[in-house]
Length: 148
Image: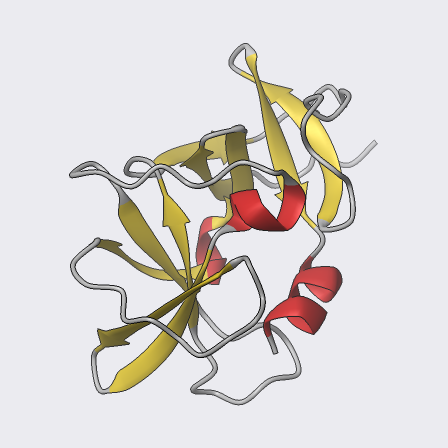
């Protein structure tokens, strides 16, 4: 059986647990400065930030998958994601997180587990146990339909 190459991931802290993504999806992690209100009826759209020469959307993944309101304090960060496949090169977006993400090299099979009780699965591909806690893996295609 061929050996699986390790994958560099980020564990992004959320109020409901953690979101696990390949680190190659992330462009930058920023302290939260000002999130400008957006005229958007979607309850999970927090607003926009100025990043580099762009104005990018910031979403609450918590609001996409739970009824929780995201915590925002001096430890909060915006994780800026590269555009998802099939979208314009300048379609970056951000996700509000409760803390700095943690880097993790995944080189073994992770045990699949159930989603936390308050999480709905619409934007979740799967959940795994990582270091004693549940990490959800986003469904990138579903996320793209919501964001774009």
